[in-house]
Amino acid sequence: MISIVYDVRRYRSLLAEAVREGDFVIEIGPHTGKSTLGYIEKAGKIILVDKGRDCEKDLRLFADSHEKVSFACADARGFEAVKEVLKETRKCDVFAVDMGGGRHVDTVFKVWATWSGIFKPRDSVIRNRELVEFLSRANIVDDSVKKEFDDDGWLATWGRETPYQLRKQLEEFSYWIDIDKPLD
Ligand SMILES: C[S@@+](CC[C@H](N)C(=O)[O-])C[C@H]1O[C@@H](n2cnc3c(N)ncnc32)[C@H](O)[C@@H]1O
Image (cartoon, rainbow, N blue to C red; front, side, top):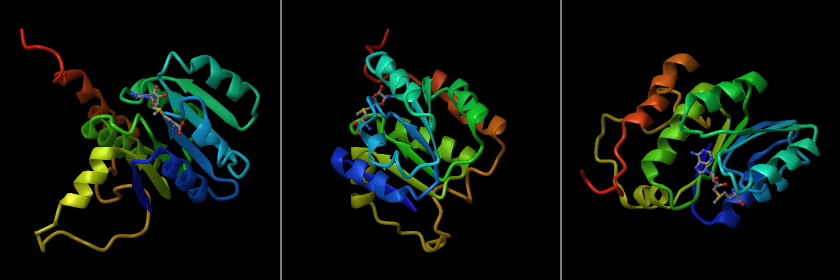
């Protein structure tokens, strides 16, 4: 299942509900680990990815004090982060993304779509306000589009290439303009 939320408390509880006994979990943006604590007992292996300098020390300590937890201090928009995680696991039952609920939807969606296309999780939990609003506002008005899907946590009809081919999608981030910067 793919679940999308905005409220951070709901994100934490949803993630805790999604994880089953012995699951492998990849979590992007745990910050200090509040969302991780909700499922740590049940999980078999947890890989945390966060680029924040403010939480790097806490997350290193967190990983050092829990054998099943690994931490990659890396930017999830880059393939280096994917490579670091691939060294730890190729298996992922639950994939969670919280890069900040108000983060630009295109960034969050692209990170989710690319990573989930690589790791093919059973369940995904995504936190993003714009994505929630988009799905609430939009109507699908095209009868040619498939509406019934297998219940899995990734776009199985879309992200089907190998990790190194999916890499191209992440690398496109480097070519994006920053909309907040003034034009030259
Ligand atoms: C709102 S906090 C997450 C809160 C946490 N899930 C909780 O429940 O307490 C967002 C986190 O995403 C991280 N983040 C934002 N962009 C990122 C990126 N491109 N790669 C990795 N981490 C990122 C930030 O460093 C921050 O720690």
